Length: 165
Picture 1: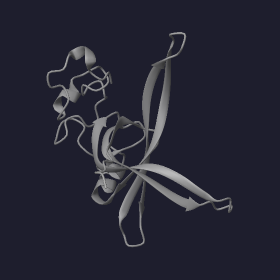
Picture 2: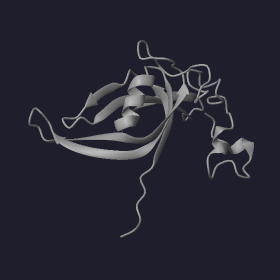
Picture 3: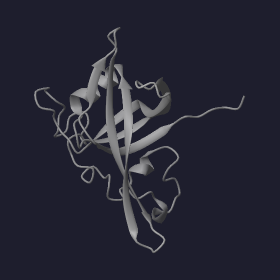
Picture 4: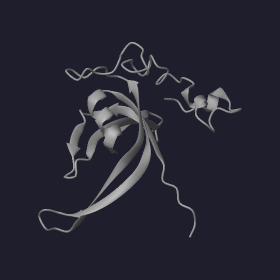
């Protein structure tokens, strides 16, 4: 059998507040939706804009942190994998499928700040100096050189060929 690979990297903003839940055996999990903008040129040359809403699931300590520090509008950078699940429709009409991103890592990159009443994360420095700042302030969203810090990106490449976030 050939080797397999299932890796997803997305960056966007939360479309709504995260929903934190627990399983019957007390494992914490969270579900939230990330809005990811994109654009393309139509046949007549006009720039069109769109947005995908991607469901994300995180477990255990990562889920607790996402529930505590994220809110609608928060900027996130997520690494994870695609998970497809199936279930029977409640109305008996057959099998349904759902696709989620299961997060392995979530980087809080701004667009939010402290969640009310939770004590929150520092918004003016601390361990993650980018938390609570807008994506533009942290170098995201303005063609910043953040991809150059990632392995395999930015090594000997022309600035004109960078991915424009």
